[in-house]
Structures are given as C-alpha cells and as structure tokens.
Image (tube, rainbow, N blue to C red; front, top):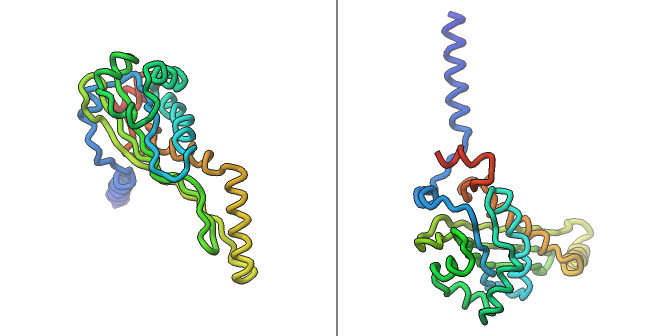
Length: 218
C-alpha cells in the first residue's frame, strides 16, 4: 500500500511540475532555419512625443543581444556608415531593402524597433513614467521575419497621505524628479533587456556564442 501511495504522489508531483513550466506558442521554425549569428540594430522609429526616446532605446539595445549570444554590429559604426551614405533618418533607413543592408554590413539579421511611448506624465494625483517598445528581427539574406515582440515598462509614483493637496504636491514632486533624473532612460534599458533577452518567454532564441545555444537549436 505504501509503495502504491508513493507512486501516486510521485505521479502527481510530476504532473504538477510539468504544468508549472511556461510554454511559448511562438513559431521558431524560420528562426531556426535562418540561424543568425550576427545582428544589425537599426535606429528605432520614434512615435512618442520625446525626441530623445530613440537614442535612449538604441544605446541600450546591444547588451541583451550580446548577452544572448550574438555578435552585434557596433552602433557607432552603423550610425557613421549611414551618415556617410546620406541616410539620416530612421524612416529612410528602415525603407532600405534587406539585401542592401546585408551588402553594406554583412550581418545575418537586422533588428527593427519602434518606440511607442517614452517619458513621464503628470496624472492629477500621480506621476507615471512609461517606456513601450516594439521590435522585429528580419533575415537580411531572405527578407523573412524571424521574430517579433513588444514590451512596456511603467513606474507609477503616488501618495495616498495628506489629503488631496498632499497627493497633488507629491505627484508634482515626483514628476520633477522623473524629469531631472531622466528616469525614462533607465526604464528604456529595462524594456530593452526584458524584450531582447533570450531568457524571455517568447523572446529571441540564444545565439551561437551562448552556452545555451545547443539546447534551443536542436
């Protein structure tokens, strides 16, 4: 009886363990077939109201991709190359054919990003700082989309003490602090890391420079 009971308990634990493992419904067939080793990050499109948003997101996008096992074309090299060729805006750069980007930089894939929201807003009795990004990875050899994702990070500051005047003053102070310390820049780094890390459920796969590469490309 005890042996049977232990067997039942073990079976239940195994089932529960299996249920606890999150599963991604992303189709990685094209990603695995492409098997990119190098990535070119393009200047992000910026549809937020903050002019500095694209630069903040671009400056912090290399780290999570490199940590995930990819060679990333240096941002300074990318920027200077486009300038030397008369391409000054993200819109013009995003419009280039994949084959042309491959010819110029030799990268296997390009990361296209769009900053949807960036910055702090004063909301009567609270202050919110939000960074929202969308991204897609495209094979520069075939033009096929390999992956796409989005991430939104928000920090809210509020104060429920001191009545309505106390909340208003607290919100104004937090708004000033957010602006002076550029909290949005730090949150852009958080959004980049959460969106572009291979550790993310439904995120990019590990690249060939990562020790985890073999487990995702079998």
